[in-house]
Length: 414
Image (cartoon, rainbow, N blue to C red):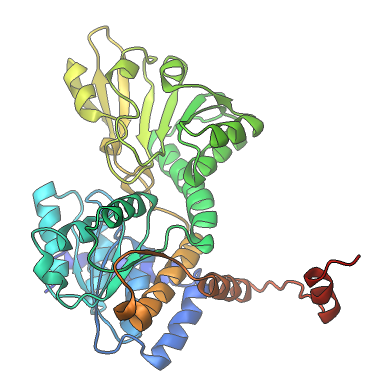
């Protein structure tokens, strides 16, 4: 039975789900096929992704494909209670409540897994963590699943390397139709949408420090630069650092950037990127935000220990007054700012990511029982299919090679 905050919110939640459906044509086309073919008939699917409208629409698509779907969030602050209620009212078993404690959040995850799923969709690795630990008995029917995020893939590959991954998982994050668009353009827009809505302050003219220049960091830095910010990038990878430099960003270590920044955004997937020694030299009223999956990139515990006063400043902004009178502003408790303080990626972006998820689950259903436990890349055929669905969905066509051109490219003569 579903666990949501308030079922009276369901009508508005259904409205939000219906809204995004109209802007997700690729997933809609996949849904039409799967609704006819019912590839997941008789199967149970548990999904742990940020509980918002695009995720809910994916859940209804899997339901239409014949699955019994059990859905939960992957971050307590990203759950939208109206969407959770709306999804539950559509017949999907939903276990998600905004702002719950870590203990209550774990109970919601376990509730979603209690169906003994055949397939899973994970976002950050929490389901896999439970299914390989104290709740491994709930994986007795599990074929495998897909992982949505960079952080989750890091954790999966570490498990696989240590021989601690007992089932196969698809690397959805690194599919071209996912990270090229979701990580770069989706994160780039949604992070700034959340920060600007939460602070109601100007971006132009500010010094923005972006920690990490992977696909997500590229998007965040690109949008900051486009809005007139002075962008500094911190990196550990010399190749990415050079790329940032050639894109017109200043590159330096965080120790040098800390006194310069007006707004800091971490996008690394690592811990302790910004710590006490950085807080000690930051400007008064500097802003700290995290766009990585877990709230460990900005060390909030060290910041709280340094503060003489902690007080709310606006919704999702907590002020930390330091002994010298400076105040540092932490957004969304250091959690994923674009979802904890915003609505997540645009529907058109998640159309591709969730299309990859749906087809990856279908692939796992077909092949998973014969795959040894490991992390598997998305086949090129799935990427190609999703890009074709997307192009048709937005009314766009591209050129095709003629037989003569194919022969020319396959040969060596001019």
